[in-house]
Image: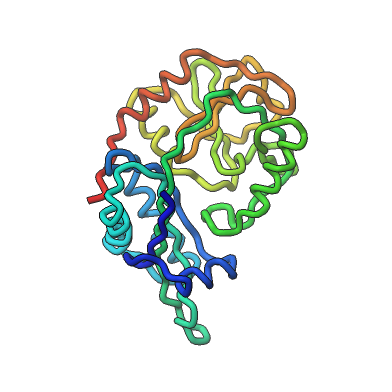
Length: 265
């Protein structure tokens, strides 16, 4: 299953030509399970905020829901990996005017996080316009390729002062056995990170947001990566092993269980 709709209708070659040839726009990705989404309101908020920031116009949540419901109904899909992309409509804006936008919805098979702990290679790098999940993803996957060539699974980004920022397509959490630390940095704040923060708060688990040095990522600290697919434990960073605290997976699952999935319809 790989389906693309544009503004609620099956996408044509003309619909996809400009997005394919011009690297512009922004997106959000999530897992649909049983017709419902964890943090759907957060994804809709992300799309509206980024559309306003990039194009100077809002994006109504009802429009996005309608654009999403169309391919789900047409394909009778209840479980999928969903990507919603917002792009400026070709030729829709004159000089200095805000463009109209198209809403592309793609459906792909459901995905789950890996089960083996990740081996990370660190790189000094920061994404351009990090607060927006924009279409400029080439450097993310190039650093992932470089990490894999070095024998790791993925890349971890740090700033010039040696503080952790984020992963290629995920946020990072650190666990010392008592408190969950979220690195403070100019990064894309993910929906899964926000759901976990809300769930851990509901459970009364201590949390803090502060700058975290790369050197801290070593045993006895445990760590995990989180994105729309879920959470995955981190086994090592630059060859330094981290703790695999056995209680952490259960704690994160309990936190997410406090956050109900929202139906699309």
